[in-house]
Image (cartoon, rainbow, N blue to C red; front, top):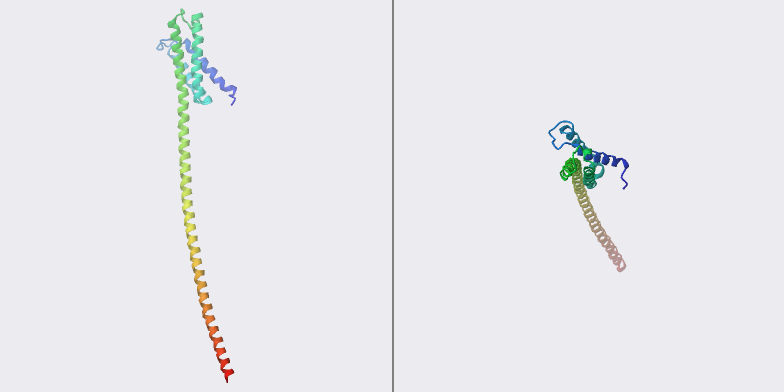
Length: 205
């Protein structure tokens, strides 16, 4: 699936925010010019952009994005510290300054990760609600299906009983008809026998 270009705009701005964290003061308590106010804005944007990246790319890709940007900005910042530390308002190139800049980038990345996890928490909560609604829907359908099956079973039992009753009734009618035929046949035979007896007596006379 091709990722739309505008998705990468959020990644670009997130990278910019992470890079700008290089200019923050290590003493966050100081308010001007790159102290608490600066860090508050940077970390706020890091959370928001992490949230957006997570929304656009999903959990797995957004985690990779956060990690790769952290590594990329850390390497670039370390090169700048070694080449020209004054860019980040530093006085000298040293391992301490490199570690300090990396920690600043790491702090911003942690807040970006917080934004990623915030969206994923909201997303999972929505999915749980949807899953719960689906379960309730399926349970209702199963219950309705059971009720319908019970009704069909009862209707089938009633129809079967009616068919058995009708069959018994027809059998009884056939038995009665058979008995009536037997009675009529006997009567007919008796009459015929009487006629034959009279005919024989007539012949004898």
